[in-house]
Structure formats: structure tokens, C-alpha cells
Image 1 (cartoon, helix red, strand yellow):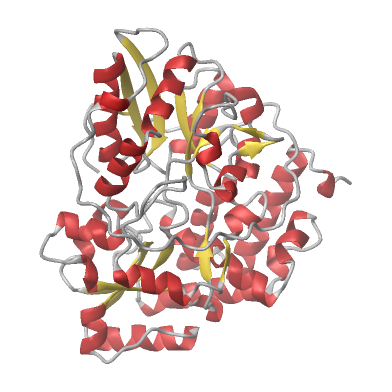
Image 2 (cartoon, one colour; image 1 turned 45 degrees about the vertical axis):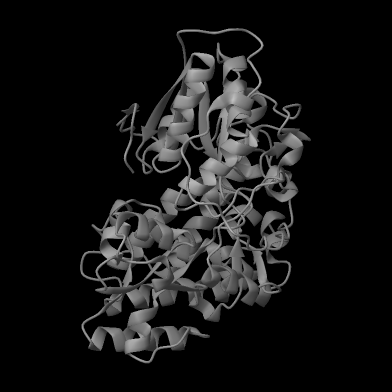
Length: 466
């Protein structure tokens, strides 16, 4: 992403501090039922950042004030930074965006929170477990329940930023209209008479046909440490379909990942795809930042990306139109359910900030209708925002995709199951070990179980009480 007025922080920390000081026990929660994808509307063409003519004047005039905002790589878009410039014009408040590489971000954030030195605004993944364990929001974040935008947020999305009835974060992210799916090049599929797979066997056969024709089946950027993990917890709806109530059993410590045959199938098949060469020769060094470049020349047929990815490609390579791409769900373990995640990158105001009022002004500015629409229109990966009145810019292909899964969807396990999302990067390392042969799929699951138990005990979760 092209960064303007950004200070790039490159801190490498030795220890991962998984538990924030004073974290309470995470409640047992059933998977949320996602809302129906919004109906397509005619999206307006991208516009210039709106002038702040309709914005309310700040309660106290400020000048030469800087608020700091730290977030993981790719969480702060160019569109938001443009809005930040307009915010500064209106209020005199400058926003210093501090971008941290994704594989280091949570280490850096945990260290700053534990040292009492967090930025005025910090980014984090929502989800009740993360709010308690990763950020301890009841101590470290400001209650935003009374902010004017709070009741505009989709209830499922807001619930993932809420602890004990208090809303602590603004999830300014397309969580419901932008899901992770296999984006496939329709021209390549048509050339080789390939169709959307319904089973893993179908998917494997597609990959083998492509390999025989010197087409790399999938782009999978492993080097970032997080992307390849998507193939596992995003299939939560399938695990739940095969074993109804599994998320509740896992949260109640009555089931284990390592005992679930569907999860074992998922990882075994992922390993098989890697061994077959479906991810290419350079998967371990491929980078997420190169995603549009890698998919623009027609040499790779598929990639797991958000459903806003086609607009990203067209933005970077105008000759590759968004309608080049179709979508299907990740078919490991014969999955045919849509993975929906009401949690996502969220903005929290640090409770120890000296500029809480200014930080609130910034969030309120982002939530003005014209600013939300500017963000949607000018953020390639955003198809909408989860707030009342936000329009969408679904392509016909994307609307057809959502329509096909209207009654076949569920919540991903990094949100539905406690103590999964906080170990995302560690799971990524385990899967790399599986690719290299140092871990078996069963051992990966056992390691996930052990980390879940460690976190639960540290949080004094009653379900893990001896």
C-alpha cells in the first residue's frame, strides 16, 4: 500500500506476550448467525475526499495537536489517510499513522499496552476473546457506547467489539460484504473447460489439470505469516455442519481440535496441495503485498483473497477488469458453506491517552455519511461498511456469489471459538512446519489445543478449572 504521512515502525520483539495484564475470563459464546449480505445498489463513482462543510465544529478549538494511531499493515487505507488530511483541515488535529508489519504487530501492541505506552488510537482485531486476552479493553480502552455512531453499527459486528455490555471499538471495515473466498480467473477456467468445484476431489482435479498445462493453480503468500492460516479456521461453518454444536463444545472444554476428523481432513488436504506444487515453487517466500502483480498476468489461476480483490487488481492493472474474476468457497473437507466473519480490524482509543477527546472527534469524523461513502468508493477492498445507511458497490458477479450462498453460511472459527485468533501467527508457523514435514497435521491440531488450554488457564476460564 502506498503510505503518505506515515512513520513505518519496524520493531522486532523476542517474546510474544499473549495475555494482557489483568485479562478476565472469556465468556462461552455460540457462533453468531451472520446477517444476509446487502442487496446491490448502483455505487457512485469514486469522488474526491469530501470537504468538511457539513461536519459539526469541534467542541474545543484545537491547533497543533497530533494524535497517534498504530495499526497493522494494510489496516489503514489510502482513502482513510485522505480523510485524515481533511480532518486536520477541519480541526487542526494531525493524525500520525504508525504502520507495523503484520507479523510483528501484536508483539509490538502487547508490549506497548503492558508498558502503558500505547498510541492514542490502536488497531486490533475485534472478537470478544481478543478484546479480553489481547487488549484487556476494560483496562486499556475507552468505552465508546455513548458515541453518536454506536447505534448505527450492525449488531453482530458491534457485539464482537463489546465486553460486558460496553462497546470499546469502531469496526471501520467491510466485515459482511467482503469475505475470504477463492478468486478464480474465468478466462483460464473457460480455456481448460473447468467448473466451480463442489468437493475437494473436484478441486484437486482442477489443480492437476492446471499443472499439466503449466499454469500455477494457486497464489499462496506464506512469507507474511498469516495468509495461509485462512485455509483452516475460515472453514468453521463446515466443521459446525459436520459436528453440530462443536463451537460450543470447544468453548466449554468438552471437545478438542485434535479429535475432530473434519479438521484433520482440512489440514491433510492443505498439505497435499502444497506437496503437489499447487502453490508454486516460491510459496514460502511469496508476499501478500505482491498479490495484484502476481495475479495480473494470467499465469496463476486462483488465489484466496477478499471478494474486493478484483477491484484491487483493476485499480493496479486497468487492463485486467474486475469481471475477469469469479468466486467460490474454499472447498477443503468438501466445504460448500460461505464463511462469514462479523469481526475485523477495529479502532480502539487508549484509556491512557492525553487526547481522548481528539481521538473521539476523529472516529466521529470518519462516521459522517459522506466520509463513509468516500471510504467505500475509494477503497478497492471495501464493498460496503457495516453501518446503517452505507451503500455497497457489489459487481454482478459478487452479488451472484452471495445469492448462491444466501441460506448456506456460518461464522468462522477464529470468531466463534475462544482462544483461536490470538494464536493466529503461531498457527501459521505450525502450518509451515507441516509443509516442511517437521509436524504432522495431527500434531498441528494438538499444538493448537495446548495453546488454547494455556491461554484459558491464564485467563482463569472456569471451563478449564481443575
